[in-house]
Amino acid sequence: MHLMSDRAVMATGVVGGTLPIAVGHALALEGDAVAVTFFGDGAVQTGVFHESLNLAALWSARVLFVCENNGWAEFSGRDEHTRIADVAAYGHFHGLPTAAVDGGEVVSVREAALQLLARVRAGEGPALLECHVMRIRPHYEGDLRRGDRAEGDPLARLEARMLTDGFSPDDLARRRADARAELDDACARALRDPSPDPVTDAELVFASAL
Ligand SMILES: Cc1ncc(C[n+]2csc(CCOP(=O)(O)OP(=O)(O)O)c2C)c(N)n1
Ligand SMILES: [Mg+2]
Image 1 (cartoon, protein in one colour):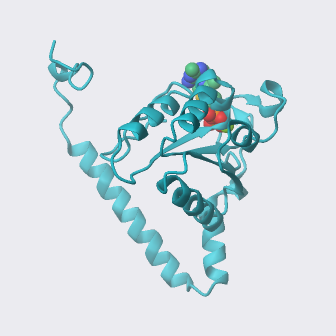
Image 2 (cartoon, helix red, strand yellow; image 1 turned 180 degrees about the horizontal axis):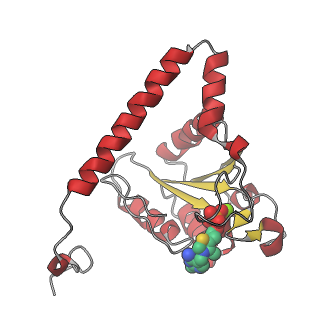
């Protein structure tokens, strides 16, 4: 929900909030650039999910909708808030090319995403990718009640697959250390950055300065 970067246009604590923004963003993009929006299965029961898929399909917006379906919305199991088991059903219903994959299998996610992205880029309209995943950590740190399934960790599964595919344990250890160093460096840089000046709080919120 809360990731931002130069290419991550927005994130928000409002469940489903990124969906219509992604459609608008896609309509403003030029060339064959594509907007990709990630959301949980909890967002699928919001009205904007359906409005966004419908409008994107009608206007052939270049959007890839990616749902991470872990079967939970905060503390409610999927069967407590919907009678529809698979999110992919809504893709078919709204007329989008749709795929459903094991979201813990990195290679399958990549292959399915590339196939759908090729269609979106070609101007065939939006697409929906449903990734079935496990919640590997509780909803928030300290909540140990439900859904802690470490065996669903996509990185651990990828490592196991790479070892089977012939990568050496040393190679994997080196890659892990490189990734760790990159993250440590990014965290250190973020902590060193000065906090924003409070007088700039309205910048980029309104079209013209207050
Ligand atoms: C509009 C809105 N309603 C309710 C909430 C409270 N809330 C936070 S997370 C969440 C569940 C979202 O489900 P999902 O996207 O599947 O995330 P998961 O619980 O699987 O991490 C809810 C209802 C919110 N943040 N925004
Ligand atoms: Mg969920």
